[in-house]
View 1 (tube, rainbow, N blue to C red):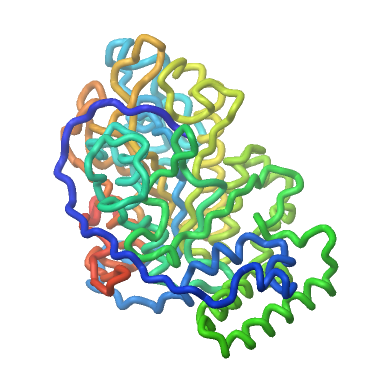
View 2 (cartoon, rainbow, N blue to C red; view 1 turned 30 degrees about the vertical axis):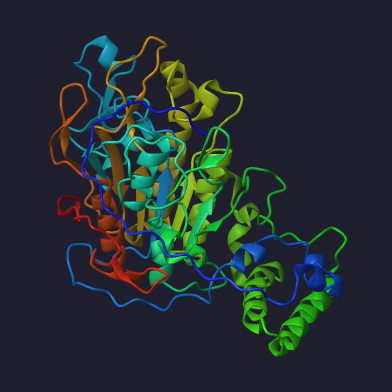
Length: 485
């Protein structure tokens, strides 16, 4: 959970249409009736209730546009999301010749790519830059976590900019990249086409950022949110473990009863709603009853060496789980950095004070380990060719270190990185000024990153999606970053 905002420069916003309210009607059968009948509440599940808000799935949308560099090379995308904003000076854009109050405590190191230097706290990533394209001139123009985050998650600027503690409401209802992808690709293999883990992103007070759900597309296209800790020795599929007092026989009986209830409900006024509940419950039950999809969550099948390679942390094991999920056929997995309660700045990248010990002692080592392990593991398994890895956060940090030894919010220029699936490695696109404060060349907007991700997946920016009123809208208004493809 993240904190307060700071003023920022203005950039042009994107006008957006208000979301049309969806109609609702009474089912005629209360949830209490179903529970008393013994069919629903006895299952002890929460995911079916989540799934019940989703439709039967979207048909494959025809692709607008044609071929291009790396077009359609990605089968899957992993969003390696660093909540709080990773500092550009300590990561991809160090300024070793700048004054100490700009440069900070850390220097730069050479990499596998001749002439490319990155922050000294990324030694593992430094050996993989031949596979990575660095974007050094990303600009959101927004200095607040939730509104700049909305822009990075959707490719659409928040209205207004620099609005902290923003929530999902009109006109800021553009869907997340994962939600858009769910309209373009059907769920398959018992798993959805987009999953977010191990938790949602929120500011202090559990104020959820906008841009994490289906927005104008409808909640049925929300990415599956899995709240979990894959580093827990008792980790199982979130919300999908059989209740301790439920034998397999009782479970099968309840499943049959659920289907009987749905069949009987055909004669009721709200048959459609009940049938949808049955369908979504069946998806969850398929996981419970041992489908192939359930296998993706069995982290104990990984060797100790592999698990150690990613790091025995909630984030590290979540990144490992993301690899297993794309292997199982999930098209987009977003792994959100989570707070570490016993650390300075709550263990997030929101480093307003004591930035140096935070970066040195846990932030950078954890990130560098998990990120490098993911890229190496994907390559070892032959998956990097068709998996796009996006290293990203909501913004960067101020050039000048503040009086508390920290760096504040900064959306005027920051860095991101892409790897895999046709991305040209060993490339730096864009340049910041001598203090990493403003772009000099190669400016990239969040919408351009979104367009490039969709392009890699085989969808041009003009590909239509449809809001709840049936209005066609382009999935992105950005430009594909051809220089890194």
